Length: 473
Image (cartoon, rainbow, N blue to C red):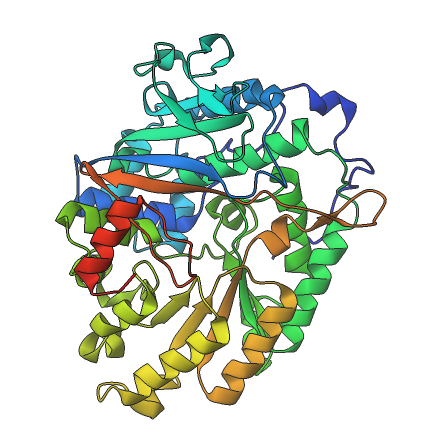
């Protein structure tokens, strides 16, 4: 295990020497990304090569945290610098050891052929509002784009912006397997840019101790947990400090195996930190796998079945056998997840909706399936990953033990962006930002989830998908 000693942390948010420079270790490794982006990239490359798509950025809570205009030059430069990233021989050796499900063919391609091409694939724009509250793209003097995007193809378009404020817009477009890796690092860069150039009322002090304490509490109740916080981390340095704290507060998996009932840190979704800290990278699939396939099929009805079958083809023997349930609602997913599929897949991931109700529903589903039943169900795993904090994870762990099903926890923002203001009077909020697959193969993508009112997609396309899967609006 790596040393748990942490270098002296700054006593202020950002040293003066950093505030107006490009200095940052964020996205200086191609592996500074979540594992499931690589596993999905391999699957997309196998099943859907040469498929066009685009992604769009959304700030869900601009009233709490909004990227300032001053941050765009830094953000733009960091994105442009991604063109220089390469999979190194050392990084490849780590993937070969820790991720044997990534094939030689894929790793050869990732190392020798894959390159980020932000000048072709990404647009970063600043959309100022006019006095009448309408966002206009006519003001090209304040539009920031990557070099090849200096000519705006739709300068005459105008759209109403609901909160009547200036805003940044980020779009990504290209072949799906070529652009799939952008989402997580760009979200991490947007978050870091905000806390460099916007909110600076915070400090690194106490982050190591807080992370260590959270880990110790989880370990004490027997919870197995992973760090999932790359996309909304405060910055790279916070991520490093937090990872050191989590490791310090947890036994290694080998040590935990000698102490029945004790929890431990199972690893991290961030492949770079897994590499430099000798941890296990954690992850399987995201919503975009199901969303993209539904769009390609032009029918969400069979999308769950096709997505799971093709995933199992890429990853035989269910080596990555945790299925994400809620893209088109869990109720619809469970209609497919039956029989041999329910028996053979390792378990399911919860990412929206009430978690205790989800646990009861999944247990009932397994128990009523003749291919699973109450005895085999005890070996099934639920991975909880929706907005967790330490207290909620502890309660879920206790409920899982009581009800007789295995549980593990992917904890993100609560680990990597849990801060208070310098005067300690109130919390310093994290940005609530997402980048979603907007269209694939020329068809708009939709995500429904189990949280009412959180549908992703236009009203018309959401209604179309609901008709396809038999869900009433």
